[in-house]
Length: 323
Image 1 (spheres, helix red, strand yellow):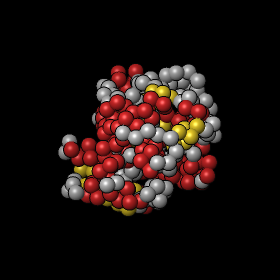
Image 2 (cartoon, one colour):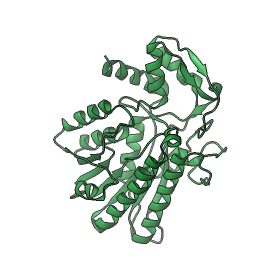
Image 3 (spheres, helix red, strand yellow):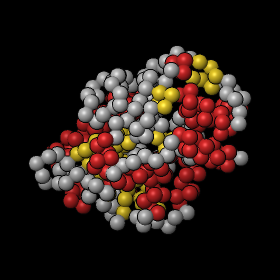
Image 4 (cartoon, one colour):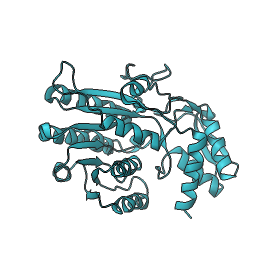
């Protein structure tokens, strides 16, 4: 059958689409290919996808309900990854987050409702950002997430609430996945690994916030994709006594110090970084760490790639892509 992937020109969207086609699925992708970051990278991802005859593409915006309905014809599952990404950009352009993450998500779940029993499952991307000011580590899906410290985080929490309400009211099987700092080949240029790599090679200082006292649960993209596909294959059952909506963490289950992360980039590049230590940025958090007990139990999720392996893989891709 056919899967609709929203945000197909994105980092995770492309990688999920490739994985779906590798196991024999037909994929319809939709993406507005906006200029939040270099469009050439998005077009290169799309070119890679278009090499596969199992992929078709709709250049459109999920905010446009008609474009979304056109893309969704004949599909039986949806992987919803389209969103306005980035915590810091939400301080500059909050309207973009309301449109893409609230209006766009609403259109997706409305499309799911219109599909009725033809829809087997809707899997959507949430974010570790929903944990906001939570100081308890690791972050558990059972923790309260009522203290978002960025608009981006607030929109992702709103998406979870909207999806729960539609699952409760209409019985739509949905699974939300809270991603933790995804990195790897074909990654986003606004993420730290891409920024640090490009600046180190250019001989520019790299900005390191909170004076380097940061920790992140860095999760390699292939591990994330394995979790997305496992979730897609395990929809919450319809028609029972419980609402067919679940939320899981997808992380590496290991919170790494930022300075070790930078050291591995230096090692892979063979270049020493010039570090510009700066205070904590507004909307940022000092540490993230995923409790993956539920996703291990229910989805068989087991992250396999450490940053010692994943960072050199990214650097190799970066050198090739930017050669």
